[in-house]
Amino acid sequence: MKYIIILGDGMSDFPVAALVGKTPLMVARKPSVDEIARKGRCGTLITIPEGFSTGSDVANLSVLGYDPALCQGRGVIEAASIGVKLTDADVAMRCNLICLENGRIKNHSAGHISTEEAAECIAFVQKELGSDEVKFYPGTSYRHLLVFKGFSEKIETFPPHDNVGKKAEAIMVRATAPEAERTAKKINGMIRKSWALLGDHPVNKKRIREGKDPANSIWPWSAGRKPRMKTFQERFKISGAVISAVDLIKGLGIYAGMEVINVEGATGLSDTNYEGKARAALDALNRHDLVYVHTEATDEAGHSRDLALKIKCIEFLDERLVRPILEGLGSRAGETAIAILPDHPTPVERGDHVRAPVPVAIWNPNLTPDAVDRYDEESVLKGQLGHLEKDGFIRTLLGL
Image 1 (cartoon, rainbow, N blue to C red):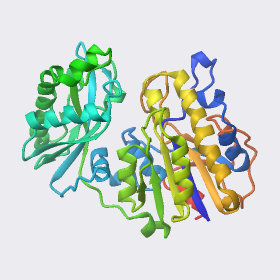
Image 2 (image 1 turned 90 degrees about the vertical axis):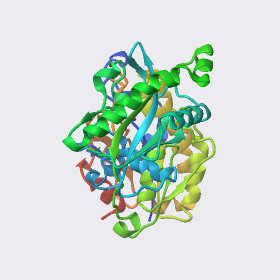
Image 3 (image 1 turned 120 degrees about the horizontal axis):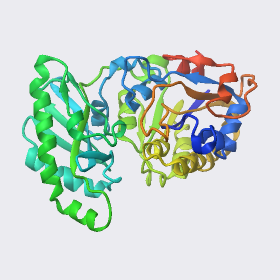
């Protein structure tokens, strides 16, 4: 058997008042996704166990069947994706470029700053604030990396996408152990210094003239040290590939021993190259047993609290990714199991990640379907898979 996992990041939701109590998945036109549910078996999956942060690192580790306790820090995962080699002494953090307005977080993405503009800002921050023990590395769009040597990871940080509208000074880094006081003080000092540095940067002056949000603050969060994980081959005796525009997902793929496939035009937004991802997934099946196809646009729409965009992104995923994959399988369709799910809800009325079961549909052509005829948060509750947790999803998909 071959296996395809299609993951719409943050795709599930809660009932929306503007939709008269329905969710985006309930109202979106998605015949191909519904076909997977109708021909397969459905249920729910707990991707974020109690006691863990509601981050995509935790959620995607759970989807792939790993214990999320293996890695409590997305920076270390993203470091693998951008080729930064970490030592055991290193602490890595995600470092967003964000937009502050009147001292409050306006958005987590600096208005979805371009990768080219962001690289200029991060290079300037490294020049002004970096040292032998503190290094900033450019990533993609607003997502970057901060690596410390000789500091502590025992700190509490606040993801900017979960704290839009809050005063920055109220959610600065906090030490959770005495040895981390120096770390928290260092990071908070750099955040405050970045306000003046970036506020006067030419990139931001230009963005303001163009009516765009400036990248006027760095925001480090999610600290951790590199994990020790078994590969997919070691765990399940199968090879895998991952397709995503997001460094976090690519980094997870690297730690899991998967081939990371970069698709031209994959942006992590609604303008991403869905068709290119579909072609890449079908091609990867020629070399691998499992392909993990991740799309980010639904999550970004949720963070932006843009209901119309989230519905549109679900429909894009259906029409431009799922349908080409189903049609392109050809003679391989009878030997390929396909799953669709989100990693977590990102409700449009809240704009942040939420700990709640996510809807799952798995179509294995060798198994009798259940009675579910469409894919959404409510319909899957009638499915045969029931309520999955821990590595239950991946083992069910693989028939273990």
